[in-house]
Image (cartoon, rainbow, N blue to C red; front, side, top):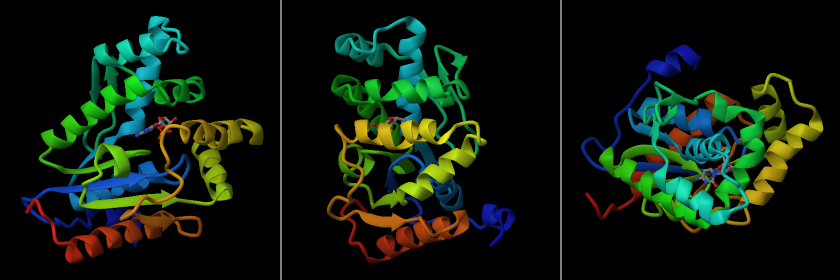
Length: 243
Ligand code: DC
């Protein structure tokens, strides 16, 4: 299926009922692009929780907050004036009205974000906000991150772990950054960051009831199709209690 036909091939699943699709996985697994396309195809809202950790990091750096000061980072999370898109069709992140959509993707943020993402107080606050956004969308949302299947939405109707070999992940992140990074910089952004992050959340092995989707040998369309297949299979076979 071409990208163009994929964009129009939508399908409403469980109309009028909750459908949270929780997708976790490491950097470079294709999580964001696949999650967004799954949301578009199923006409669900979409939340990139990693962008929330990046926004908080941008805010702390901008405000001169010492990232090593755990209490200061936690306090920053509580006052963060964050406005983030919940639509796959539109990408924006604003803090205090300032558009930081592009700024949060800068290598300086990628290098600093683990210090914020490993702050348990800050996590508690961002998790609270993530759950509120899911509820605001009547629990019809694709939510991607590292702890969605296990902590943020362990009762999601569909829970999947999107993985890929380290080689595939480094290659994809390199392409994403337009070949601007050398092998060492890439490894720092992908492998080293995941190692730091996995000290607070385990996103390398699927928890009970979480379906693993390995995209190492799949292209984008094949991965989207496989993810949609998992959604349909789970929805067709699961006895939901919240119906
Ligand atoms: O997916 P990403 O690279 O944009 O994530 C940014 C950082 O936030 C990364 O260090 C992992 C962390 N993160 C997290 O700890 N929990 C989440 N739910 C999402 C991201």
